[in-house]
Figure (cartoon, rainbow, N blue to C red):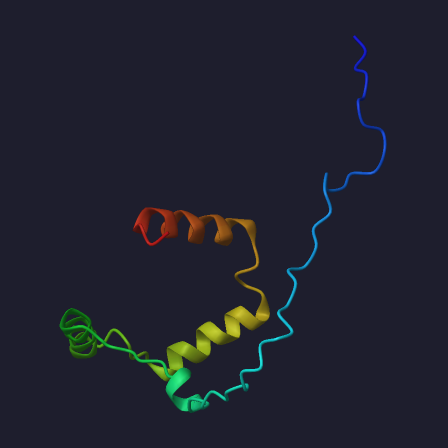
Length: 103
């Protein structure tokens, strides 16, 4: 089967467009617009819901955010020594993440 091309030249618009003509008789003065303060334009707000505050309070009372400094040092040392750089560890961590439903 052979397809015969209809247009072999460059692709372009079928008609040319021209800019609209400006009215030279418009003698109205140009008016300045008062600038708005940048602080009003670029402010962000964060609102924490009551449910979020309750969850944060629950975590603080359960001690979930605190870790024994000695345990943190042991874990940091194992990470730096490459103890977790094995396929078995990566596989176990990925399976636990998938099972937890966090992903």
